[in-house]
Length: 412
Image (cartoon, rainbow, N blue to C red):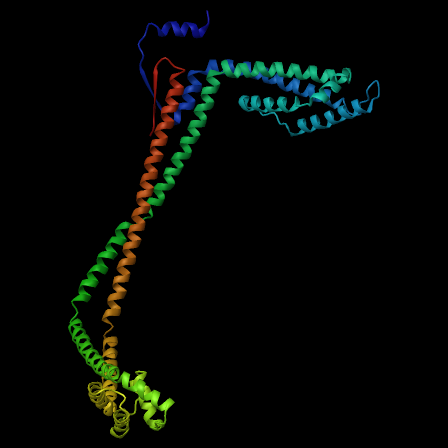
């Protein structure tokens, strides 16, 4: 009575139990428990593998005999076809390496036979008429296919334990790779120093607060206020000049027309002053009561403007009689503003504040980046752990197909 049948019979009269196996011991456990079955399956496969290799080399020898083939009828078409068949099949043998692994051998032979049989229909007809030597090649090929089919059938249906241990080894290797990856991730995680960055951020935050309490800020505030007041006064002066120029604009435009198109003569200095007022080049105006008097007289005598507009023109012109005084005041404001700017620059408070705040922002960006790295590593470790659990479940599933008891694989 077969041994495995007796084992199955005994299992009918006992309860299932759980058997714990450490992950690193799974392969040895299976080899020990299924030793006889493994040896029996391997013996069958080895015997067929031996036959396959022998038949493969016999076929190779048969092909080699086709070298310098000459047909009985000595027809070139037959000889050329056999010559081509010989060369291509010899190359096929040269590139085919029969592996020792049963499963790899099955695949290699399947590919080899498929490639060997690839013959065009016309060539098939010619090869069938080529004679005994070619017939012997195809006879040996049929024998090789027969044994190859037997070998494939054996692998498909009668190598359960061999397949299982092969699968267990593959899964075990995948788990080792996942564990190595997890170890690498943990090493990377150790090198990420969040606490140092957080400490540095707190120190810079403290520096910023202390910097904001500096007494010099009050003085800086006063200087800025003073500067703002000077800039407003300077702006008002320029606004007065601009407003006066606007009130004179129509009169100046007509006055220039009279000079350019009629017989009005005012002199170069006067016209230069007029053009600078028109173009708002206030800093270039060199005014005087005498020159402005000529302008007012010309506008009045030529009756360029109506009475009301003329009065506005004359009132605005008085502003430019004292243009030097305006420009001196503007220059004085510029000088004082420049002096205040130098004092503000000497304080360097804002520059120091900017440096501290930029440092703070930089550290916060670094902290965020490091936290993202940590989060990504933790996510990857979780995915890695789940993948290992799936592999172990697959391993348990493979084992439990081979044992009556429930096998539980324990991961250290």
